[in-house]
Length: 353
Image (cartoon, rainbow, N blue to C red):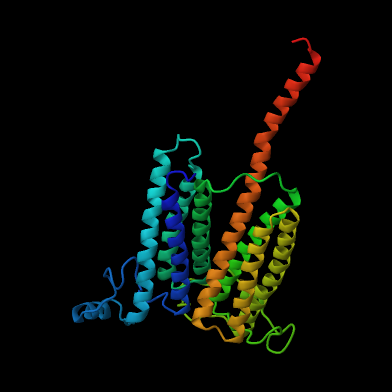
């Protein structure tokens, strides 16, 4: 039976997914600087529209002329993100009020509150630092982290899953490794996107017709770029972008191998449903990644690729949640088994009682 707060947590999870996709859409339509200030847009709560507002924008932001379609993309993302932040504050307030109730998570909503505050800061820095790749990537990771934590809270409040029997330790470790690798691959995807390296290699399975083309890994992953230039469109040369793209491809190969192994272990443990879920999420994401290269990054497929990454992360959150809940069930069951064993042993020692 679902606990109080489940519906709100589930609604916030769905909204967080929308916010992640809107962020991807904003980035892919080059609208990250559609509003050059924060949290407003040219000093207004919406995109300037009237003649007076446009004159004000031109006077105060002469270097960034108003592009209404980009401004709308950016502000819609901000409106949805602001709504999500309010919902997470409400979840935290409910956790404080119900903290003494049995089964009510408390630390998780407090952690989420800290994450959403940091996300607001990164959202501001994304604009004020003019799409600095480090900040853009961190903002993406923060969004996926927010989504994952909300999904975990929804799972904990749902009461929908019966405890599993203890699972093999190697399965739990493999699930944890897979979760970390999915996060790393999403970070690499963010680095690819923020440095405009998605089509640095326009062919498959080779890159520029070579298995190992010329690539500048030093500059591709230099984390000390100067803050100040406008990073819209990217600042790296072709070799550096090639290095980033190649690394993302290699990460995808490694992650595929690990997820196939995880699916096999889940099947062996009798969890065929979760095994097929992992395989489905992996297959969709690989297909979308290949399609991005073949069709040269069409907007719908690029956004869907971001959705696929989020879906893969949520799948791994579910697998790890179920695996860890099985471990918790085993730990809780152990004292009961010990108590029963001592009781039976006591009966054997004193058969007359």
